[in-house]
Image (cartoon, rainbow, N blue to C red; front, side):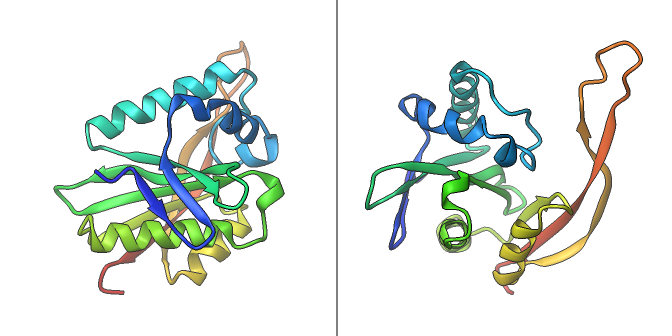
Amino acid sequence: MITELHTTRLHLSQMKASDSTELFQVWSDPEVAMFMNISPFSDEKQALEMIQLLADLAKEKKAIRFSIIEKESGVIMGSCGYNYLDNEQARAEIGYDLAKAYWGRGYAMEAVSVLLTHGFSSLKLNRIEAKVDPRNVSSIKLLEKLDFTREGTLRGYERVGSGAEPGSMDTFNDLYMYSKLASD
């Protein structure tokens, strides 16, 4: 499986342990973590554990996640990749996140575009999916600009909160399901 992708401004490189400090900065920001279905990280060890989990999935060819690196500065600005690869059914789910400093500058569009190109041409995928919190307006706009189709709402799909404390209750978020087919 390929471990690097390039665009005009970005270098996407498979995550590695040495990326943990910069990725921790991204994943510890509550505004970034809000739509990732994670609590903001409070310790760099959490970033290392996430990177290791994703590396294990990549070894099994079940996923691959890239650090998004700005070519000009060499700074890691976020991550993107195939959160789930189903080779038998020729489909994948993508995900992406960016540090706030890089929002609104077209970097997410550039990163997702290269994932689509690689997914359809090299991985021979038929379908690429993205699940999005209905409140994540920026992500919805990005997917719609890339001609994804909103297929519907996954009701009560994602658990929010731990429910572990006495008297507390879990809540469940709806998610929108978007997809793009190779034939689109």
